[in-house]
Image (cartoon, rainbow, N blue to C red; front, side):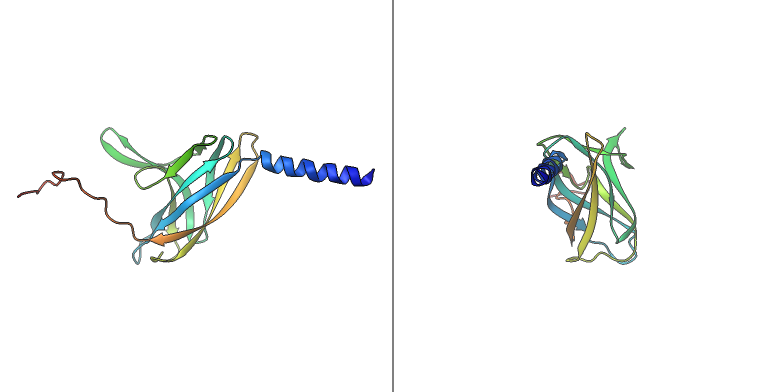
Length: 157
């Protein structure tokens, strides 16, 4: 009887852990910095098996880490911290330059091209349970956004 109870407990534990939001992370990267730069962004694609939300992040390379949104407000691009980012079940959520991203501020040193930056994402499921996701983001120089023909103010032929 004892063996059946233990097996049942192990089975229930396995089922419970599967019920929590399972989040996958793809293509995680951090924008490399120049000397004395105090902030940078981390970008990635997140996908959750169940409805969940990204509520915070931490990294040993930064004193402050926040989930941010960049959005147009009255014709002006503004960046602000958000309390959470929804991760709808089965849908990929892109954290990218010019949109949602993880902001690393009060950097403790330069993030050089090729470095590996550890980041811990904190995700909360609908049941209120939190899950830490440890990722290793590669640092890289981001190319300047390509300008479309005719967008430049000084463009002449």
